[in-house]
Amino acid sequence: MIRLFQVDAFTDTPFKGNPAGVCILNEARAEEWMLKVAAEMNLSETAFVQPMANGYSLRWFTPKTEVSLCGHATLATAHVLFEEGLLKKTEEALFQTKSGILRATMRTDSIELDFPSMQITPTESNPELNKALGISPLFTGVNAKANGKLYLLEVASQGIVEALVPDLAQLSKADARAVIVTSRSYGGAYDFVSRFFAPAIGINEDPVTGSSHCYLAPYWAAKLGKKQLTGYQASRRTGMIVCRLEGDRVVLSGKAVTIFRAELMA
Image (tube, rainbow, N blue to C red; front, side, top):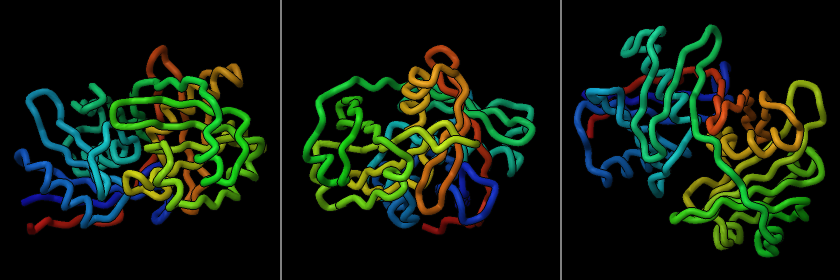
């Protein structure tokens, strides 16, 4: 029996936050099969988790491709392991991934994820990208990897972030695997706001993106002079992520709620 879950991550309210699939494997399955399951789920990411001698193997797939890091699907996976009793709530979830070893710990009212801190390098403004997004950024930064470029663009206000209506067709053709658009918040409960677009890998807009906060947390920590920050992702579903810098790691905190449990028949 292959157990399949859908979990809303970075929220404690059903139908908010970011939905992720979680598939618990008893044995290794082919990459092509996992991609088909992710396409069938048609969520931004589906996680595939398999017990190992030392923790769990964890991989993430969009409907189009495998990704090397996904925060909300990791949170969803840890939530399922704790909720289903596969791990005691006093135990640490240890995940072997393409981004190295990731850890998840149950706290009183949330789950903490231990993720790598990711750096952004300042670069020249990208006219094609700006046109697709309809913005004039104050700052353009990039993290370039073999699988493509992730851009971080800071704009002048939260209102600009919230009002974005990107040309997704043009954005998918731009020199970007993924784009984070961010600004300082208006104040109050959040330090910064963001949105995340990645149509090139099958994610038009991700509702709440844990991995993007691995870039956002060190970026805003340097600008605001603080190591603990709260980010608000201003998507239609919305979500909040508490971030804490610890050396070259970022601890992301969030809640999750299970929407359904199922048995995969294929």
